[in-house]
Length: 511
Image (cartoon, rainbow, N blue to C red; front, side, top):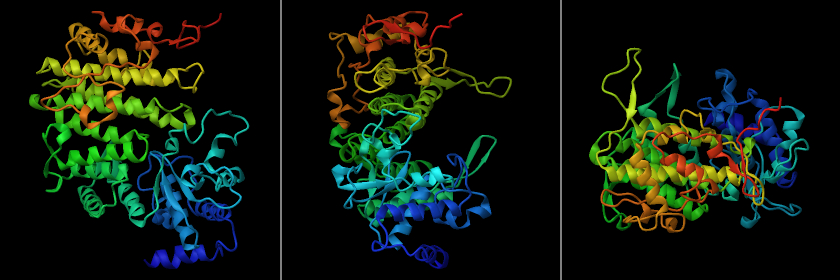
């Protein structure tokens, strides 16, 4: 408290900023520049632990740490409030910035539908060009670079969540953001993270207080983080058994309900613009279904959830500076699908100490078929993402790492873990209208998320491809997937040209 009052509050007051002496943008620029001057300048802090607090702003030089974008936004907005400005912490899935009621003279607010203007804060560095970017409307991010033309806007950008950000207008929402961003990893050794159960417990209990007070209902990230805490250090509250009519009154744990609530909050309050709620829930079912044959159906639900994450991704226009991390997330999901779902560890380890992975032996054939249709849905959305990556009425471009034929966790490698009979049956479920499927859930009927969930007594099958490359069972890619020897080349994955031709993923070399 002494550090906050004596150092931070007095530091802000010494700037002599107030709504009477400065415009909102001038104040944001002045405070954020002062914050960045105070901390160590680093080009990237993405992998740095505990870089998101006021303490790092005031004492980071002692530990040689800098602020990340969340920490910079949080400290700046706290400073604005000390100075008497109305300012909101505003969050997407991979970025943090500032929003405020639109003032006179602000003609193009990025969140005009909410009567809010925005300010960029998280621009690391202390060069003049970096300082000038702070305090500007986020929409200027896409128009201010004279050397690089962008097709993006806040409504098509993943980094800005399609202009559907989480706006922390209340103090409990800000506190939830702070608690949710507590990193329970305390050290990294030899590529492995060491986490603290004590930190998980503290974080879990703090988030439960906010949850029970009704403050997390519009905060998907905080709900998912609470579920993650319960997975790691489970409490009696997390083990409470619940039933939902939409799941045929099948009993579920409160942990799962937290992940469901996270997804529903994103769908209801943020136009289904978030990827990570589906990822958290997918990880939960993946881990629960890996070991016991009677829980195998949960692997189907995990892949369905991952496919819905990819479906959300396909709605964004891709540019490296905006959604590179999103692309990496899809690659990580594919790695998890390969190593944790489609493969299992053999009883005996290899001689070099590494565990050998072999194709999973499925207890129920219906599970592998249903799972396969959702695996196709996952890749279908990524194919679509490439095809429409330049926006409407433009040619697509190749950028999805796992759509490269030689990628070790790509479409070819994943489907090769399923035998030909299974793959043929999977394609029949997806494409044939008279296949006898008990339930099919595709693009239109997914409007009710819970009705499409996989339970012990109810399987669903994906049956509505949207990408051009998986449009028909007779297309090159579908034919390749049905063959005994599964070989997928550049030709099968080439994006169709504007007149129906096919363009290779790589340009041919000219001698």
